[in-house]
Length: 210
Image 1 (cartoon, rainbow, N blue to C red):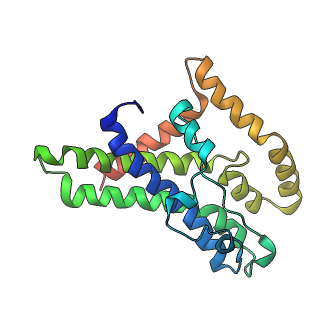
Image 2: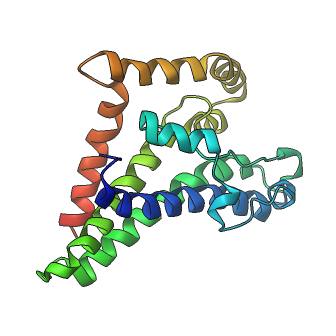
């Protein structure tokens, strides 16, 4: 599907915006809590080129899985005890808000329209909902290096958090790659099941349930 020119016309701008705002949200939130590191690294920017990882972008088109450059953060600068939690959640929240905004555009301007020229715009808006929900749910998974692992670390009691962080940083990437590989060698993709079921339910709620 990623080789379909019409699909790419929709997919690329929606993806760039989703990834850029996700990473910018991490950077802005860290800066808000006193950390100058993201700004020094040039990540307090809405320029997609500041956030794209060349290898992650290549993998997106080859393996249908990719990533942006993680925002560098130094927790020693934080001025709030829950700053790390909010920095970790910021990218996920940014994607959820984008999905809600796309859904609002759908209901305000497109839901009852039958004009053929709007078909491409309708596709873009629906894709915006689906893609941003997928990114939010994917990043919520408590597997290092995804945001969800950092969120869970911040929510656990200190002793359990230290044990989870040590385990996650050691084995998280292996677990994530194994889950991805299973999707290619079996009829059922664990990641697709974990993401697609709640994504489809939420997308239906946003597009049909208002």
